[in-house]
Amino acid sequence: MDEILNFQCLLLLQKKILRTLFSVLLVAIFYIAVDFVLQKLGVYLSVNQMQRSIVNAVAAILLLFATQRIICVKE
Image (spheres, rainbow, N blue to C red):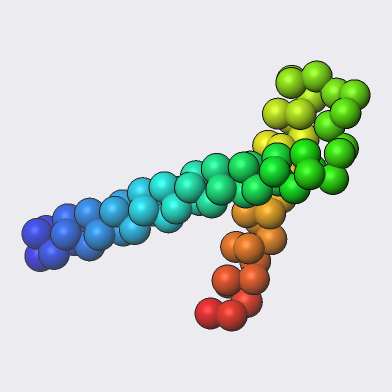
């Protein structure tokens, strides 16, 4: 019985780790995409690198939350 519970705990932990890694990957992709789009639009003409990084990170995290909500609604 304990072996079954341990196995289920390991599967749950593995699922959480994979979901976290997938979220990190999505944030990285969104970060690059936001940077590319805003650079092409000319938004970054008068901001320094720190401000640019903050804007990209916030936008990437917001996009991650939005996509997770869409995925949860579809499931």
